[in-house]
Length: 270
Ligand SMILES: Cc1cc2nc3c(=O)[nH]c(=O)nc-3n(C[C@H](O)[C@H](O)[C@H](O)COP(=O)(O)OP(=O)(O)OC[C@H]3O[C@@H](n4cnc5c(N)ncnc54)[C@H](O)[C@@H]3O)c2cc1C
Image 1: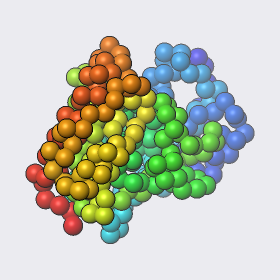
Image 2 (image 1 turned 45 degrees about the horizontal axis):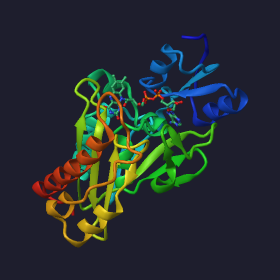
Image 3 (image 1 turned 60 degrees about the vertical axis):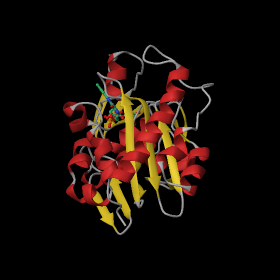
Image 4 (image 1 turned 45 degrees about the vertical axis):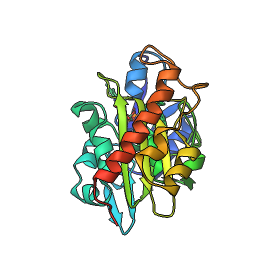
């Protein structure tokens, strides 16, 4: 690890000022991705600006059919929230399936979404639930936020403050997970809003993506057989030591079918 300065911000304004004054500075949330890459010397920030002391960045608020979660809310808090388990159980379950207990106690929603790891779980929820990423200066809809592997629409000095999720009528997330890290080799989030269905895939490609063909099919008939025959092309999908591109393409169909089955096995929210 290279040497760096450490600052603990007490407000969003102070954090933003540090980023603007020191272009080599990076925000520190739970450190579960950033510190790991610093240890490997893959990244070399001149300064870390810790968001852990900004109380306004944490918390979960449910208002009607909108759920707002602060950027610094830890995965463990999202998983354990009784309010969220009632309003949006698929999101609480997703958080409970991230990594292990230690990572869930440190990792944050904002850190995961800003990092946009191609195998991370939260980006699929943000995209499937038609969420809005709220930053210190603007609101960015999910369809415009994720730009590709570790790439987002965030400016270098921009800070996520919260994410606003729409509550669907019913939804489920199913992943084929890596047995050690629990990152998604392929994960599919299906959300039925009554007025339309959104299907978001993580793990399979360089970034999270939607499958319009499955969305149309499920909008016509919400049933496993509507997606069980839809194959996505393997070109451009990830291929690594864990799984090849053709296998991942196959697993997208399998996970989507299981997600629809899970949706149908649970009561609708409204
Ligand atoms: C062993 C292990 C297993 C894991 N398994 C999974 C898994 O199964 N599924 C999964 O989804 N993830 C997994 N993760 C990742 C984990 O969920 C992390 O919590 C997540 O990547 C975000 O980390 P963090 O909140 O600690 O952010 P950090 O590591 O602190 O930051 C990550 C990046 O986001 C930036 N950032 C942080 N907060 C903000 C903000 N508010 N605004 C703008 N930029 C910000 C930072 O500058 C940095 O670039 C795993 C991690 C580990 C170590």
